[in-house]
Image (cartoon, rainbow, N blue to C red; front, top):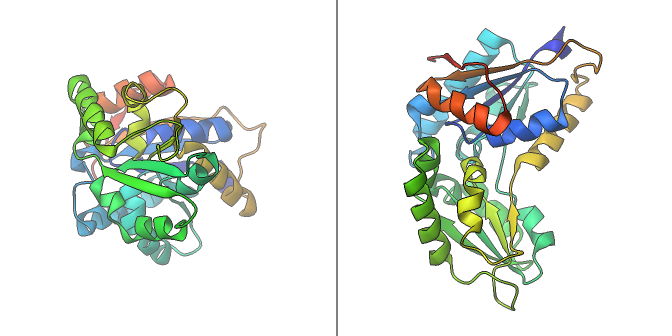
Length: 270
């Protein structure tokens, strides 16, 4: 039965687990298949052609081998580079992307000044720039690419992660609650959720951190409901399968730490 099929989720690595965590909270009865493409990461510092090729290969694999009923592209860079092509190539298939939560930040900011951190690939994409420009006049955005931060989180390099967070937050300017200060910070990469402690250590109390997990989870529920694809509440216990194209230990450890999942990830090459 189509409703019993799994929801696919993929990212360049472990960062998309932050989206999976929100999806499981919003859709507790659903099966999930998570693919970390860490054998080909980082996406954010690669060209669009590379990211598009990987995204196409992963979608094809998850559809043909796992027969997923929907796919969440849990990567800002892959969404920006490829989701319009994926939707054209898979008509009628439910594809949900992610984007930095700029719209949410507008309503949160009291000073009218919002910071945004992300990968170079995301922040220089036409999709992101169009989103930013659509909100022009409502708030002022300060944009900071964070080269190397996603990789430090992916490889669990705590020393580098802390140092990079300190460097990039300092480079952005003044955070606070006075006129002109940035009082809101958008985490424009799914990996950055797992560095929130290192980020907030360099922010004044009360600065809002805006993530993408909950809005994406709500959108996924809405898409599935409209397509009559929600799994019944009384169905068998939900399952989560984890796959990696690279080091399975990284994915397993991250899933155990952030999601409480102890099942080992299985190697996958596509």
